[in-house]
Length: 230
Image (cartoon, rainbow, N blue to C red; front, side):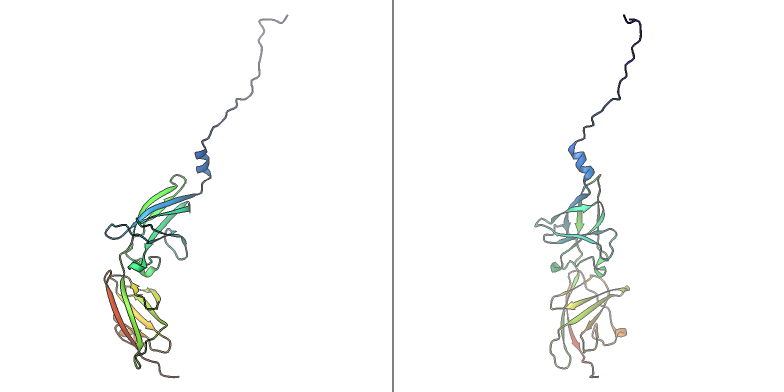
């Protein structure tokens, strides 16, 4: 008979644990994109319907536009499938005088908020201001000798406070938006004619700056002198 006082040794295998992970945690771990929601408001705090919202890298650099989306009738917007990161949001509505702030000429004095989406915060909600409204120039261009209207004109705007900031805009009948409360040098060019500088010079050094208030409208009647034949 076996000795009842003998000690019996039992080998116990390693303990096995079952880890239960909620599906939501698995989804968040695999998720690599978020959503940015918000509302566009004007300088008076009113929602702006049918505006366009642009998502760009922060800080804003050339050629780094991510997405654009319109606002609804309530001024609200939703931008989905946004990769993790920090972004600048810009609002515009040129048809109502709010220019595109991605263009450096119009970016001065424009508030451009940022939003961040990450695994810890996959949804960001933000208020995006629009404006201020630009001034509007209506341009009438004709041959000084014959009075014939001229097409294919180009207007160049140069900021007086920073002459490296300039933009050229085709003059096609629609009002040209100019940054408000800003001194600008304006040049008009048509092939075959001397360049015109506001307020009616043919020499750039004699040009005078022009400035329009927010929402102000002004009409320029430009008469160009034909270049002498070669």
